[in-house]
Structure formats: C-alpha cells, structure tokens
Length: 275
Image (cartoon, rainbow, N blue to C red; front, side, top):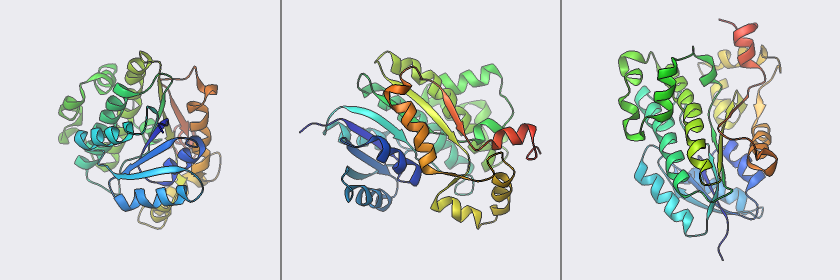
C-alpha cells in the first residue's frame, strides 16, 4: 500500500523529535552516514508504532542523496523532508564542513524540491551560528542563495584564504543554508510546496553533553547561563517550531528562518554575551 513519505536525514535527537511529532501514518525513510545510527532511531520509533526504514546516506554525495530519494519514492509520494544531518565545528575539518553542511544541504534541498508532492513541506536544521557572524554583502548573500550547486564550493568567499577556522566555516555554511532556503522556497512554491529553516541554539542531546564535558564546555555553559532563558533547550522544543512550520497552521510560512536559542543571539549582540 502506498503511503505519504517523510524523508529524514540525520539520525539524531532533533530529527527524531520532529519525526515523532509529524511522521505518524507516514512511511519514514531515515538516512545517516552511519547506518547503525539510522537503525537505532528506526528501532526506537518502530517499537512505538511508527513505520521507519533505515538507510545509509552521505549528505556530501549527490549520488547518495538521489539513491535515498529513489528508495523513498518506492513507498509513495514524498510529502515531508526533515534535514537534520550535518557536522559541527569540533567534529570536522573546514573542507568537510563546507562539503557536508553547505554543499550537501543545498543539493538535498534541490533534489527533494524536484520531486516534492503538491502540498509538501520541508524543514532544514540550521544553527544560531549563522546569525552571529557579520553581515555579508548583498552580492555574497545572492551568491550563496543562487549559485548552481556544483559551483558553490568554487565561490571566492569560500576559499581557504577567506575561511579563518572551522567555526567560521560552520557559520558560512549555516548562513548559506538560510539563503538557500529562501531561493529554494521560490522553486518549491511552483509545485505548491513550502520549505523553511530552523536555527537552534544549544539543545541538550548526547552530542551536546559530550561538548559540555569537552574542551569547549565552559564556553557553552557560559552561553546558556547568560542567555535570557538561562538554560539550554530540548529537542522537543525545536519540534514545537517544526510542527508549526510543517502543519496547516504554517501554510503562509515559506522561505523563512526561525531562531530558537533562548535569546543567546540577542545576548551576544546586546547583552552579557557580547564579545
């Protein structure tokens, strides 16, 4: 029997929280570079009544993305995309961050946009980091938004001499995610579909707990202690925003980015977190 299909990329806690909120009654195809991660999420969700199939997928590879989409289409029309895949500044090199978080996200949005069903909707998980860096020129923003995907990594602003470190690479990737969502929303709209991005701050996940206990731990703890909320967030709070964006209540929202960081960015510019 054909079902509506949700494609979930990135088998982490935020992606699973959104899938549990929005994926009931659907076939959920979860892809992750580590198959065992996708299998773990699938097992957890299948044991409570969802219909989840795990697959190996590399966000940095167009071929891998297309293979995941082709598998998903065997079960029905793709009506939802949740992209929660990516690497962090402490996990990867500058090149890998740009290849996965920037190029890979752009390719995924493009490829799913080609097949998304009318009335379909997508969210991609960006980051508060994209809001921290100085504004780019309008020309640079347009390049990030509109450059053909296979030419993105050749942009002058993304060359090694212009990228200071892995955090800067991550910030550029997340700025690109936001601009790319705006440009893709125009294309998705022609198919009667919508796409938005969510930019979380510090969200408690197993990975974040590792960070709290790692070399950058004091930096993170200081960030959530001095943000207006006074605490980190939870994956389910990100899912609250996704539920609005992916449901009929968000029918007039597309091409937008939603910052959910407990006010950390506000504090960074205008409060005690100001550098």
